[in-house]
Length: 461
Ligand SMILES: Nc1ncnc2c1ncn2[C@@H]1O[C@H](COP(=O)(O)OP(=O)(O)O)[C@@H](O)[C@H]1O
Ligand SMILES: O=P(O)(O)O[C@H]1O[C@H](CO)[C@@H](O[C@H]2O[C@H](CO)[C@@H](O)[C@H](O)[C@H]2O)[C@H](O)[C@H]1O
Image (cartoon, rainbow, N blue to C red; front, side, top):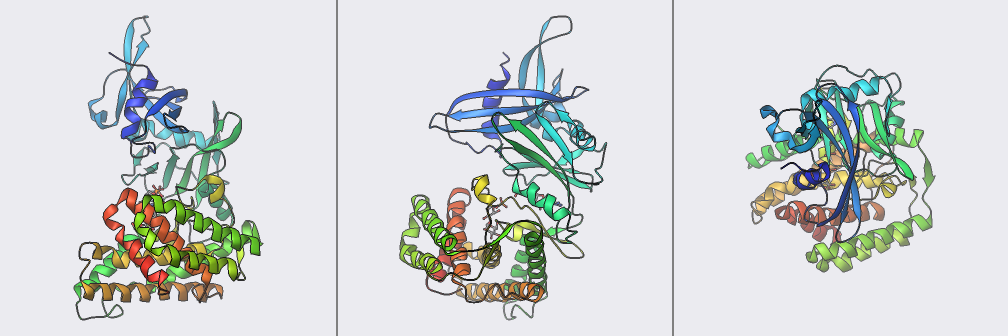
């Protein structure tokens, strides 16, 4: 027997990668929808409001494509069957599919952006004089996590934000600001979509960005370099074929260029004593809540508190500005000509308002330094007692962290990696965040940030 759409969604949504309420009991679900295309296959978009038995709730964006008969080729995208009336008044069923995985339903997103449409509560904004491809289907990106992305040909990538939050998404806000700077290290924004939310600021529903062709991500390249080093038992990091230091240096200068443009076109403010005190407090709070998830943090408590107190006690000369916020090797792409920085959304677990606050660029430096550490040590997860490998991992991390800082320093005139209590605290804070992330997502990787905390708390890099 077929069910109402909200019941169908209740069964289907918990199995989707992007659904954040896994394991929580649903108290209620309501949905409202509108049509983006009425020609075959019909495309509708639904705001699905889920409330949980343990309190709170979330609103998700769910595009669906509709067919009068089941489509075998789309079976993996099948959502459910919903009762309908035929033209003759007969009772029948309509079959709905995940529209992001139904290629025939992907062109309308681009067509509406080109014509800057408003459809129901949804507003389509093309960016400036952007050339938006039209009439091509989009293929879903398989690495999807909290969002769902489509690649249109080799030209554009469309990212649907599944969870709706009031306010402009920082990825769009920063993309829109940087688009006007001609910065060579970003993928220009081509457009974005907003959706009205009752009684609140509109939420960002999606964005369209230039697709970076023929690129590899930094994590893949860095870890290939580490594997090369491990394979060459007697050679040092600067002697093996896959040495990454020149790329790390170029990544440092690309980062400096992006930071400089962000400071040029968006707000800045000198950091005052209160900001240092508030930052130290926020880090201490994060540590306290992380303890509940990762009890192993207990042994680092005293060391970490001392690192955070040093921030409040010795304010440095720092300018606050918009930053990337979740900068790591997985967020940068290497093309034939250089690096491109992606995903200015900030840490996914933070509330949107927090992610839009001004911060020190050292936050990003710390993120990338942590990432070099991760790349160097992730293979030690399988061989934790291999001291020779541990030694070589440290050598690789030191070399590439140094090269990244040298590149940043040469491009900006500011050495980001000097003896700064703030940088050290940001590294420690990121490692605490990573402990929680790993405990929840990849428990066997938890040792990576935990071991870094041992080194950081002991005053080593
Ligand atoms: N502009 C782009 N050009 C090429 N590839 C991209 C672009 N933006 C994102 N990607 C790739 O698409 C995948 C998904 O990216 P993203 O949507 O940022 O993931 P998430 O937000 O889930 O971390 C990643 O593998 C990323 O490298
Ligand atoms: O890319 P996301 O915005 O989803 O970031 C989250 O996931 C990252 C892992 O994919 C996580 O990054 C951590 O692991 C990376 C290696 O997989 C490493 O390069 C990073 O330095 C490390 O922080 C990130 O923290 C999390 O927010």
